[in-house]
Length: 278
Image 1 (cartoon, rainbow, N blue to C red):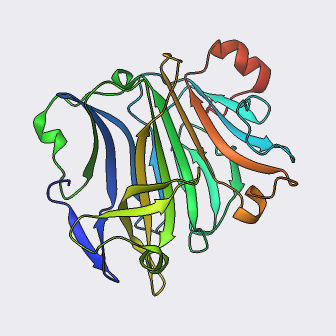
Image 2 (image 1 turned 90 degrees about the vertical axis):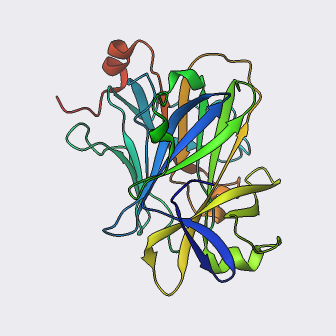
């Protein structure tokens, strides 16, 4: 469990409580920073940032998934996409507004209306990476320790994974307590049903700034994924439609996505344009 991290007990369950988290992957003695999760003091909105990947040129996109396609495996980001030469962050606001942004660097054009955080329940984002060494390595021991300003979340592996998947699930703490089947204790872990229908266990991160009589929490889990692709890559999907749309395969749905790196960037900009400030 991260050192110096605040633990809160809500309705009998223990949660981590912090404003900002740095998600890391440790293989043997090497630890790499993968991405950040943070909650806004202003309105309790959820944010993810991706400042640690070596590649800075990517595609941001609103992907449209047509009706009658239950499990798409090959979705292009180009039709609804724009190129960026910056590392961006993703925001999911309390009212459901979701978008990619980066202060004074890109136009906030890739956006959509998703589910309001107080109505959200279940899958809220997925991050996938290939090539852990291509993410910033922690070189100082003190940077592996949590502080008052940020909490380090470390997922440990004995051997170097080819690819990792990080999944975020969102629940009210009341619903989390209702569905909890394990013993209460001092470890902030929570079993839940993941998007693929399997029961998994994730770290429970309570949002310290969103409260309307009950609290809300992000449950984060990480797993190795089988892959034959050894290219370095970072992908993200979030900003989903309500479950009644997502799970109704007679209806189309949209999702926000990013992918780094982008290839042949200058020609790609001519094709689909860029969101970067000139």
